[in-house]
Image (cartoon, rainbow, N blue to C red; front, top):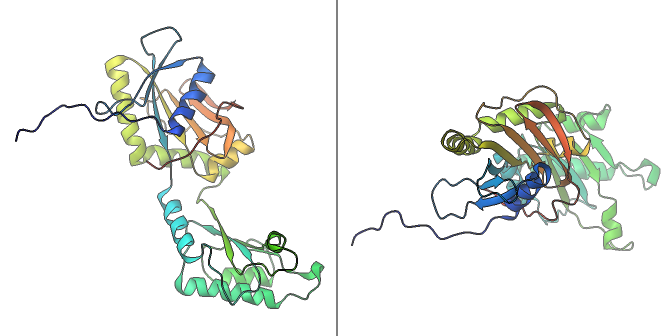
Length: 292
């Protein structure tokens, strides 16, 4: 049987984060979306934008998500080893913060549980003496003991004081461990985070498509990235002004960074100027992130 070549693929609807990115860019630049990648042809640009009332696009927009593989893998491991599990050696609930260098499960999990159980034994029954927080960055014997676990993962632990209130004042809180994760970058590493993203395989694929759009059609090129990293979220929350110039290739005219949790502002960088914090309150009504 002969194989049909060049048949169009089944069209697909745009994803929520793609529509949100389009809305932000169109709102700021005063453009409108003329055409979207609907999967009907290979290597289509995510969105072609132009002036309202015009039929010819002037901007090629690619949209991506900078999901950190290590962050994703750590989250899966934490759900597997902690999740909604109850631990009989505990009497209360704790919140534990992990980094991307975490070792989860096995002897490391046992060491953490033993440490938390030991903290509970220190409770005097007096509210003012209750141990509610230990940080690896603090001074003192408890912080030293936490560092001595050599988990390279637990940077802070907190007694979940709200657990009893959620479960009723007369009920014991569940013996669970809530988990938080932090990335390997902090706000001061903003430029390094961007440079690492631009060197990655996901960005390369997007940049290759934008280069073709620039060379073949003379379009202005924009890359919009939804960043799940706390680096970008924290920077937006603090109205941080990123220092320095990221290693943006010449093919890219503009780089936009947004965070799913911070929807009132985005970062915009252009070849003509430095980073700009752009206020977009109300433009992003709802964004359901999906992994590429």
